[in-house]
Image (cartoon, rainbow over all chains, first blue to last red; front, side, top):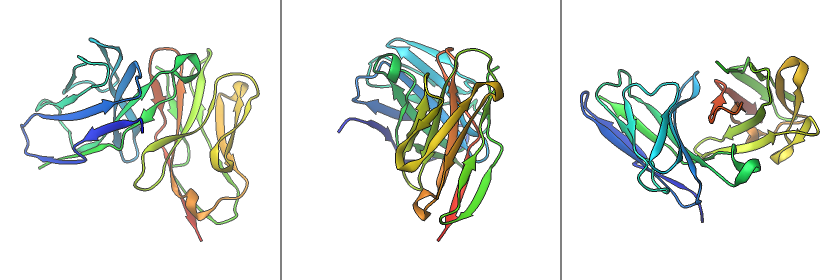
Length: 115
Length: 112
């Protein structure tokens, strides 16, 4: 079945450590996104990528970095510069022409807790 | 900047009650609108979408939403909720700047 795989599902890290969250899709979608979900704040866009080797900052990119070396993969690194990294991180992708271009398919999410 | 507002953060209803969740967006141009739902322990998934045409759109599980351009609104409705509708609901808008903007979400609890 096609979909988005995020790993790990749960991650605990000490303050000051960088962590990388994996996101892989087999939907052949061009666009991929990283959102952060916090209670009462909805989903906020961290980074997005429309094509391979290109990505753009979202609304809350500070303290995060991404890469898009392959169409299927869009890993997110939460750096030590991110002041409040404990959150639920969602990866999404979209594709399929004009009608489907804005419809996002989401992964199951990764919950990061910084101790 | 474009924004999406959801006025109800928590809604509690009894089964068979009618539901209406408010959503307003701030953008004067062409906009694509969405409702996504996150059931407990499940992925976020698309409930319904509006791109153009009939402003009353129907989605899965008996949900519908009405796009009212003059009010910048896209409210979600269901005539009779079920316990299985307990979830968090997110309104979202795409305004052509290559990103989807989400509202803060509404947690719906349906008591049996």
